[in-house]
Amino acid sequence: MIYTVTLNPALDYVMTLENCTAGEVNRSTRESLVCGGKGINVSAVLDRLDAENVALGFIAGETGDIFEKKARESGINTELIRLKSGNTRINVKLNAKHTTEINAVGPPVGRESTDMLFERLSRLAEGDILVLCGSVPPSLPADIYRKLMESLEGKGICTVADTSGKALMLSLEQKPFLIKPNISELKEVTDFEISDRADIVRAAARLHDKGAANVLVSMGANGAMLYGGDGEVYFCNAPVGKAINTVGAGDSALAGFIAGYSKGMSVPDALRLAVAAGSASAFSDGFAKKEEIYDLYGKLTVQKYPCYDG
Image (cartoon, rainbow, N blue to C red; front, side):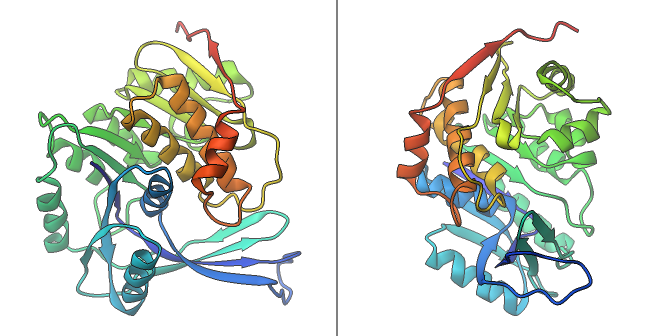
């Protein structure tokens, strides 16, 4: 079974505008209210790829009630822990010429609620996949992902960390099976200048050396790269298409890779599915359907790249 964890889920209020000018009154052409948060997004796309999963996380207040209702309506299988105070956050996504995101802080997560999450994860069994996604709320320690993985040490759980900054670097101490930085996050945690493929491989190799068995780097319109635990490096270019909504495209890519890996795909084929899922969602008004993802999957090729040798 695949389990996703979103410590700070959100209701995403998505507004589409022809133009967005700071300091002026702007009017949208379309709005939608959807469940968001990186792990929730991953769960939604895993569902589309027929990969059985459970979405874990915290909700609070009246907005938490709405979140839970909408998640169930969309078919996401959730086991959410209700916080004693605050409200599930509402994030605003503005889709104009460029996508602008305004993300809220979210409710405080107390010790009792955190203990409930640890207890739930203690029931995971050998062979399960745990996907830890998103930023860490200010009320939780930066090493919470490391602690969650540490609590499962020796149980044969496959762990994935999709976070950034300090939380990402601390998670590497537990040697996760997979991490998924984008180019910006890769620059942040390595302090490398990245201008070409060789730089991406060099930066990914640094994170591999620090503990990540596999490093999946999402590169937006340029596709993705995988620095594999087998010492191989693969690139997959993105298909040509018109980006409609890039919010959640990276989460879709991660879901594609995990779905492929969980079904026994080879690493190159799982990478192809990652790029297909990320691109198909970027080309869609919302997350892509299974048929759209596999249509792109059949058109993609993966290139093997020389490993960085230090």
